[in-house]
Length: 253
Figure 1 (cartoon, rainbow, N blue to C red):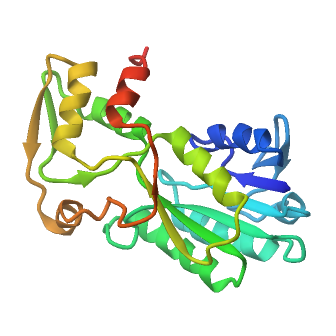
Figure 2 (figure 1 turned 180 degrees about the horizontal axis):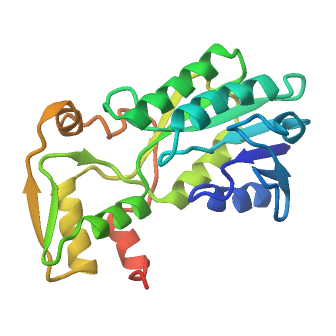
């Protein structure tokens, strides 16, 4: 099938594109510049060249996002522009990459992701909204950033289920080739952890001299994370554990 991937140069997209090609799909990668093999130009933030990029696409995997900039412009308005530009006569499936907990965790970025889901549900397009837990790589980078010399402060009682990005990419290939779910599905890691246990396993491999310090986090965010808002309630799970990821991933240069 003719597959268009938005966000193809991101952490997930870089793993997803070659897997889609290996599965026999013809894959185009949309970006603002449209460079590289299979690159086509299209800008979610402005709508520029979107119709041309989407022309003929039978499957769209919408993985583009802007967590550090203005998600309301790219994730919400950009998704609306995508819906308006898609080739409805050709489209068989639109797979949207979202995040587990966006309907329960009070963060501005998550609110924007949830609003983008509502745009797609109202579009009457054949959609599957895939909420995925945070990636192992993200947790790895976050813990390194959080460490302060010999101390590694982490939120007390927060519950997570991180997933390997390659497992997520493989799952998206399976979903893209299947019939649309018409709503939300979830995908997470094979295990649930407290953030404290996650950090202790990380420190044993990455920073043996570090001491994990669990700190209470008050307010709605802390309550949601302690209640398991970031943990999937249903759906498929990846196979790669946090320990396996740490053992297989070299220390950052």
